[in-house]
Length: 181
Ligand code: NI
Image (cartoon, rainbow, N blue to C red; front, top):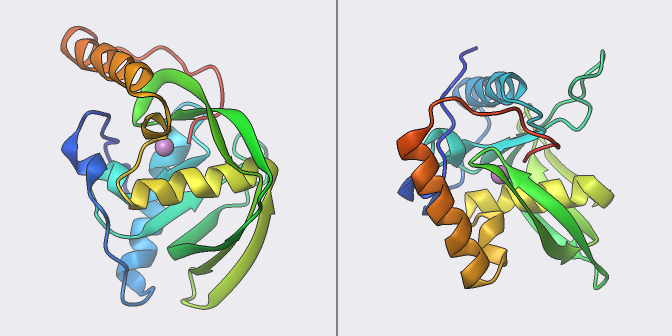
């Protein structure tokens, strides 16, 4: 496994629509392992998508139990939301590619997602609450969308300006305060 560098906005690689994998083979499994290692190494990271490490493939990992003794990582290739609830929820989101910024985002409260697992088997999963939010946030990454793209242009541009400044002037990142996706 290898720990990779996580890129941050406004890096153009985060705006690319990633391509599906043909199948989950050893190469894709290695990418999943690298994503997990990179996510665990990041402060409070509970989800990471391949484009965040400059790999434009539809692959993501999630582990909401990180930090606990037993971890339960979820690895998905080519994930697709095949149903989403009419009920929506607003919750505070953060992102490893948008360091130190959090904002309320409105999304469907529950989703059903279809994906390929580590063994290249097709799976379907019903998710609600934070897991549903996390899955939608990570799938957004595969489409070149960040959580700040769900905000008003004024809020988004304010965050992007601050991030550009931070890149120029700071090298040390303070610890994140909440789980980041
Ligand atoms: Ni994110």
